[in-house]
Length: 493
Image (tube, rainbow, N blue to C red; front, side):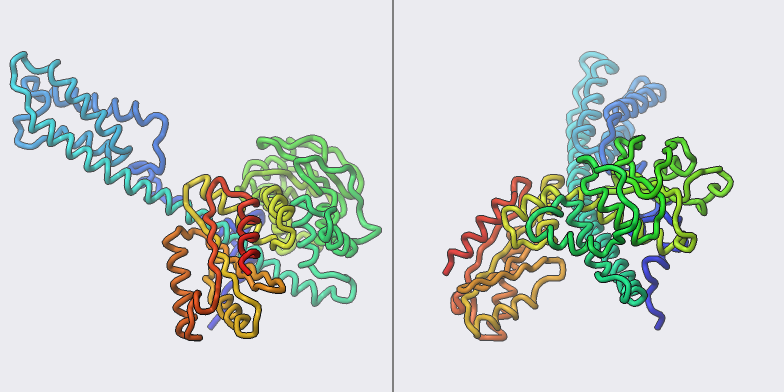
């Protein structure tokens, strides 16, 4: 059986600027555009005008066909009520009922005075419209929730793809440069995360940052200027990227609303003038992807640069643009450019989540960085779509028997959860962050854990004196809620 292709191999048919997360974007086909036209994902601003125009056009056509019966009541079937039903299926019950009210307003204008009011015609039509609109509204809400969950899972899958790619690169470079580099690529990536999160000069983080920075070439390129608030730690980022990707002359420019600043946040090598109208710069800004001289049409464009790499956040918002004027000849290859994009992507993601992570790490110094990052993502997910997540803390007494129970429960966690084991002199605590888990999901998880304990050890939570504490993650949650949960667990002695 053939081995699965690597990330770089799967990206080989795409432009060099494609980020690994682009692999999971569904292409827009002809049938997809037709579905979006018939059933839009969101109600556009012109929906009321479209519904009113459609209704008026059909009423005018019916009046032209039969001026004695403009609503076609005597035709044996209420054909005109198909119009409000279609509008309800397309935009929801409110616009469908509005179209039906236009029918009701049309009646006294077109029928002679004294004509009996056709109650069954209108009552049946409104019932049909409301049923169709309720169906559309219900499934639109379900579709929105499913879309929000898929967005979160795609973000997790994107981060996992980056991690696997960096792991492969780390092993390759460790084999090639073990004798010349005192630290691994993984240590340097950890330093980049701390730089982006603004933690490089605090406490133990400063020691780790200094250790990773010691691996940089002491005689290498130096930053031209300190970065502003938009790109914190950009000088340290440039130092590492220049070393890892063998860049000789380059500069990093902040980007605001799609427009790059003419003043570099930091630079390496000799100074050069930045031209925002350069073809390579314009291509990178327009596509949001890495552009280089081997890109389509760039060999004859007369560009004065070799590579323009966008610095993107997790939501693909452009934060900066790295312009490379000169680099080692053999470094201008797909793998090296892919590594450059991944490094910039890690830095961009760290900027976006750095503030929330920093607040959590200040309140709870021993909190894992990945736990703080996932917690911030889940708070944002609930704020955007109302999808709830939870934290479950299981507190075990410290003894040889209970340590076995603790290890057993730790190994039985769900694949999507993030387990944070904490131990004190009196208690062993498993803090389990459960994405997309509402109270029913928490109850199911606790029932499954208790069932496993009963089957394996013939005990349950009460018999083993295991404390259970829960915290639901909402849009109002913050680091104080997690700290209070840990205080409650610590007090359960």
